[in-house]
Image: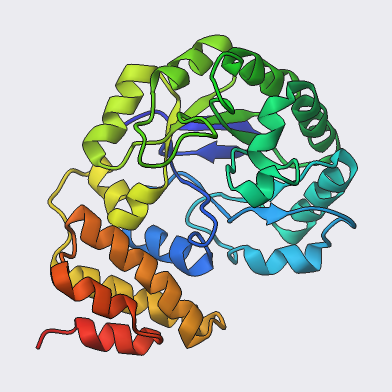
Length: 320
């Protein structure tokens, strides 16, 4: 498929307008690198997992290891999450020094531990505070700033107000996850919420939630009028989804999936991950691939999930 790219100004462009979502515990350098490798020219932008900002501001030397080296196959954002405008603004300046291409602010994380500390989706309940924080970052940071929200906390009645405040604060782009904070990932995403945000603002709106196949990605574009689509868990279930949207084709073969898992483990090891840590991330992938039918494991899955080391998981997946 062909869709026009998204121009954010200052030489930053998301082209094609298909983005890899930042996902805690998933989108580390290894995962991002492999997604870009398996989908050449089909990912318009990527973003780090969120980085929690409290006090003092996080220095550039601590942010730099989260970023991919240059040259990059796609623009890379550094996502920040916190509730103190001064600390967030200073850290955003350091993100520019560290080499990020843009800064994204997380107002969507629904995790209870985040909500209890008045960060992430908690700020959806205080739109003026969300706007103040975002404005402080925009005014301090030399990079384009984007924002990601959920459609609301317990209801979506304030969605248009939230979207307008994001625009008024100076964000170049708004991503709307089409679920509420109180809704689970198993609950269907309501794309009408994305459509409402598109109608409320003039900045580009990216839709997120439920776009887990090439067909559903295109449906989100058509039904909401969004400028871009962000894919999260769909990329775990099908690491080739971006390329298959742009150049329709069949799903990856079992040998291709096994090679992807092997490359993923090797990349994590090169990055310093322990075998146990790498095993945990591989298990996430196995659950997603099995549920999507790309690597059906059936009754073998529980035994694989009990293994403690990445090499043991990969060895057990090899044909017998």
